[in-house]
Image (cartoon, rainbow, N blue to C red; front, side, top):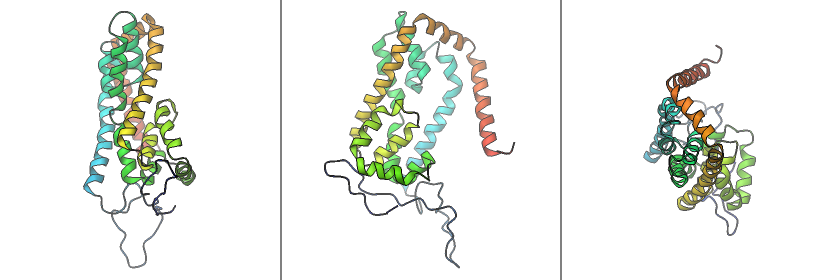
Amino acid sequence: MSDEPIAPPDGQEGATTAAPAVVAATETPPAGKQPDPWSDPRLPWEGKPRRVDIACWAAITVSGLYYLCLLPFRASLVGTHPVLLELLNGSTEAIVSAAAFARVGHGSLTVVLLASIPGLMKFDIIYWWAGRLWGERIILLFSGRRKHGARFMERVRRSGRWFTWPAVVISPFLPIPNAIIYAVAGWAGMSWVTFLILDAIGSLAWAGMLAGLGWSLGQRAVTVAEEISRYGLWISIGIVVVVIAAQMRHVNPQR
C-alpha cells in the first residue's frame, strides 16, 4: 500500500493523507538494531504516540467501558424508563419499548424520535476522528480484514463521496460494526459537519423504523417490556456472567 497522499477524484471528497500501511507483526529489525518499543501492529499509530493519539484512544476505551457499565441497567429500564434508556444507550429495545408506551398514552412519539438521536450518535464522532487521525491502520484494526483490506481501500479511493456518503447514512442498517464506516468516512476526508448531518439522517431513519415497529405492537410490546423489567435484576446478572465468561474464554481459548 502506497504511503503517498491520496488524490481524490475531481469533485469528490477524498483523504488528504494516507496512514502508513500496517507493519507486519513478523517483520524483524536489522541486525544489531533494537526494535522500536512503540512499533506495535496492535496500535493504530506508528512510533511514539502524540497527545492527540492518546486522547482519541482513551475516548474509544471510555466508550467501550460506558456500554459495559450500562449493561446491568438495560433490562430494568426498558419497561420502566424506556426514553431515559434511549438517551443513555440508543438501544433497539429502548426505542421499540418507548414507542409502544407512546402508543398506549405514556409519552409522545416525537419525544421518542428526538431522544433516540443523541443515544445513537453519542460516540460516532470519535470513530470518525480515529479515521482522520490514523487512516488505514485503524480501519484494519476495527475490521480485522487484513487480507482484503487493500481491495476495500482502493474501492473507497475510486468512489470517494459516492461511497462514503451513502455508507454513513445506511450504516445503522448494515450487518457490520458502524465504527468501521465512520472511520472510513474520517479517512476519506469527510468533514465533521457533513459526517454529523449524514449520521443524524441515518440514525433518524433507523429510529423511525424501530419506533414504527413499537407503535404497531402497542400494548403487546409494553407487556413484554414490563415483564423484562420485573425480572431485570436476574437478567442483568445473567448478561454480566455471559460477558465475563466470554472474556475469560477469549483470554484462555484452550478452556
